[in-house]
Image 1 (cartoon, rainbow, N blue to C red):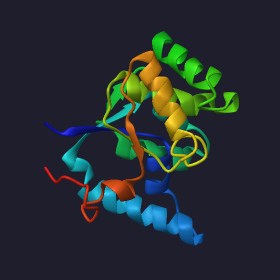
Image 2: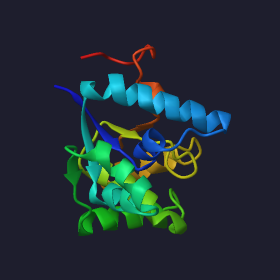
Image 3: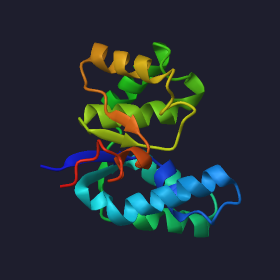
Image 4: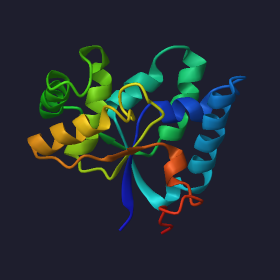
Length: 164
C-alpha cells in the first residue's frame, strides 16, 4: 500500500512559477519539479478544497498553471469538524490566528490520516518550533499528525525514502 501525501498550496506554486532569481527559491523550484516528475507516482496524493481555492487566487494565467498539476488528485473536504480542529490548533498556540488557512491544511491532513504533509511553508507549518506543538494538539484531539516535510525529504536520494 502506498503512503499518502497531502499536497499543500506551496507545492504547485513552486512547481509552476517562473524561474526565480533568488537562489533558495530556484533550488526549491528545482527540487519540487524533480519530486513531481519522478517521485509523486510512489504516493497517493491528496489536496483539499482549500488548496484548490488558494491555487486559483491571483493572476488568472498563473492560477491556471497552478491548477493544472492538481487535476486528477483526490480532493478532501474542509468541513465543520476540520474547522473546529483548526480552531484548536490556533487556540492552543500551535498556529497563530492570522494563519487560519495553515491550521486548516494541518487539520484536514490529520483528520484524514495522511502520512505526509508536503509543504515549503516554513513560517507556520514546517516550522521546527511549531511542529512539537502541532503534534501535541493532534495527539490531544486524537488524530495522528502527518509527517510535515518538504519534497527534499521524500526524494529517493534521501536514505529514508522507500521506493515502491
